[in-house]
Figure 1 (tube, one colour):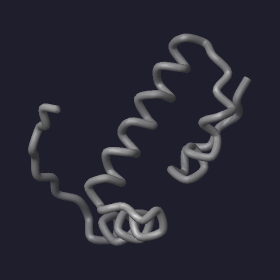
Figure 2 (cartoon, one colour):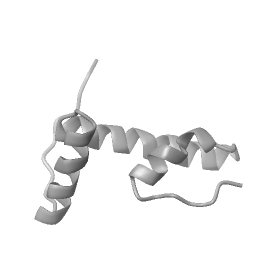
Figure 3 (spheres, one colour):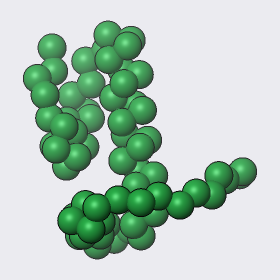
Figure 4 (spheres, one colour):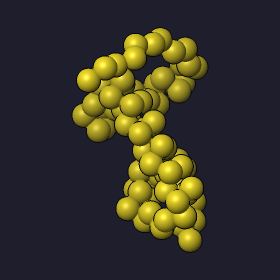
Length: 70
């Protein structure tokens, strides 16, 4: 699997939050960030496809992105 390596800068309070979520999910901060990005991609794709994705609701809640599913 090819991987893209990058560095990001973020506010300390965001990094602290990300670290806490990663610990709760037994992941590294990098793995948690990749997970969030993948979930967001799935949400956007399902929204584009007009699908009802109730199965993503727990992820939306965890990411603070909950919204009404039609």
